[in-house]
Image (cartoon, rainbow, N blue to C red):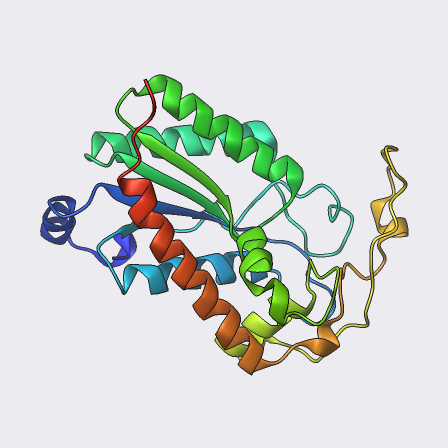
Length: 241
């Protein structure tokens, strides 16, 4: 159930059935000329809501901001720092722990490496702080790429490409404003650059023209299936001595 929509008695009742909570993370970030800035948040939140419709699990409110490095120069990208993200995760984890929850699934629709590393570090800190918690850190977009690999026409699909455009076309078609041209970033290997948009002008990684609402529906279903199966494994996981 969505924590934002629960009453106090409903929260207490669900806590008797599960100690597992999804903490969804997104971003406010450019997604080409055709997708909304909230694309990452929309995708991950819709997926975990669908998992929660199948089984008892808490769904925390999503965080609409992430660590955005490669897209920092593009109009509309509003990011936070890695220390800020880590602090938020630790504070939320401690508060949820105080509410009796013990299984934390940090799941991110934003796939930036710096962002994901911050979530991994925060997850490790929660493990150190509490000896009776389980923590999982999932990049929801990488999970989507994995389960949809054989169905995606674009070989190197990623940011604002075929998968993301298809899912937004299915979930919120009114928010999709046409299609951006096919594009891929051209950052130099190993070298950090200041003017990042010079190496990735349109902010698209893939070919949005290959997208469709029908594909988006299938992609969402496949990810929900995989996440629901993962929760069985996660909730029964016991570390080796």
